[in-house]
Length: 261
Picture (cartoon, rainbow, N blue to C red):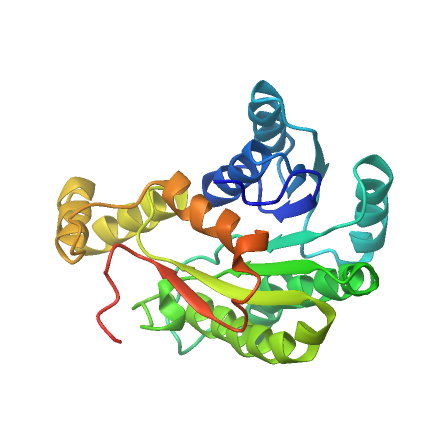
């Protein structure tokens, strides 16, 4: 199936590994030019190497999303090397586990800047170009916590949920310009982030990581964690011409884990 993405240009945030790397590879496979951004040079170099191995036209950007001052310079470099952003994948790292009560306001503010303000500011930077071309895709990866809050992940639950309200509002504003905006919700996908959360839970509860992971998988109707490429394929479809009539939506890729309708 041709997704109609050949020659489009994508910016994938958090592209150094896990979901971001898988999304970048899925888009590159479809002939999309891809810029991958991330805070670590080693991880970004690894993604770039993977993309070039499949013939992808790509660049890597070392980018601390908490630093809003570098947004224009980084996107200007991308525009010079690859072209204007047609597809923006907002994928940020998750905050450490934390309870809802008793957190330092400065901690909340720092996480808000890197997880929410950065996404909004980067989107605002690329929207004028999308509007001028009459085509664009804004895809924001969040967490199952936006539907069913996850215990001890209060910062993630709260901040990612704010992005859902923002994306839904944005979708209504830019639909007339040929731009779609959607939220994608991963369930338990087998990434280093999920492994770290399983490890942290095992340590808190004095259990083995294997026991915690097995217990988690039993709550998933498909009986396993998802593969990063399974999640990435959904994102690539939503970025495509075929998904032109999907906007303002929250799409679950969770193996049936989230129990609510």
